[in-house]
Amino acid sequence: MSESRLKIFTGNSNRPLAEEMCRSIGEPLGEATVTSFPDGESFVKINENVRGHDVYIIQSTCPPTNHHLVELLIMIDAARRASAQRITAVLPFYGYARQDRKDQPRVPITAKLVANLIVSAGANRVLTMDLHSQQIQGFFDIPVDHLFASPVFFEHFSKTKRENLVVCSPDVGGMKMAAAYADVLGAGLAFVAKKRKSATKVEAINVVGEVAGCDVLLVDDITETAGTLCAAAKLLREHGARSVRAAVSHCILNEVAIERLKSGLIDELITTNSTPNTNTHGLPITVLSIAPLLGQAIQRINSNESVTSLFRIKGF
Image (cartoon, rainbow, N blue to C red; front, side, top):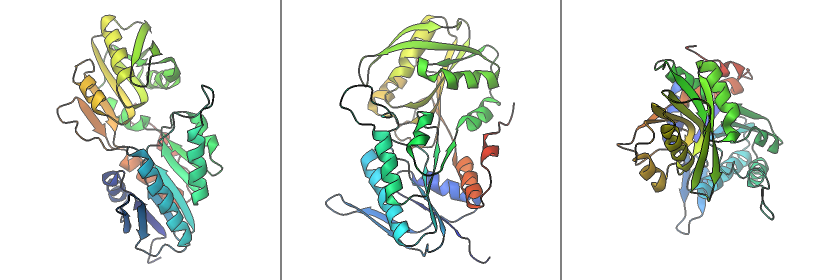
């Protein structure tokens, strides 16, 4: 076939990641105009023929979340109206994922609403990574390919193995993830009991597990203010932890988080480029690339192959 039936486009949320993904699989990034009118309305024009093509639209719904979400919806609609054969929404980071249940009266389940919007816009399937909760896959009435950043983290850790390593969850809800990391890394397991006082303030109450004299690895799926991580790190150090590192799939660091990271409670924050990390110079942050992982997933979906092999772990 002289022309690939695969077309990849991106919005403005994380263009460097999209470009790296395309380089990793040897495909060009499609030409599309994604801009805004003076009144703030988003405008999209796909500048290539996509009729009958397998189209992938890469867009993390990171801040400004609403703007990037609307860009995604409009791009999907544009591809659908241009007669694309199949449209896959590639969401390295799925925003609104923490609003996945009614935990108080008269609140929405926004994660489900966003899923409905993506499906209604015309997406035929979704490719995403490290959802805040697994059940969000069930919010979609279309196929969802859910990848994990853990193989990327494990490959990194295989080069920096520690003797007395303890994997710790900063809250009870992350115990399943922490247990999986501890199993692969051959490490001990602990967790921190916490109490959330507000959206930005967290109080760590107690540590369950032995951390004295150990190198502790905190694992979580998302951090925004670094409140949970820093509160846990402070308590772990009080209990004798020798060092504290954190592995977090999605970092959406605001000014509050940057100030907290400057405190030195966390020796190293290891994350991915699922969202852009700007203004982090001088901070102990290591960014790992998920571009090859997502790029391979796109290739496999395009050729109707299994993505299961992408969960295999190298170096252990």
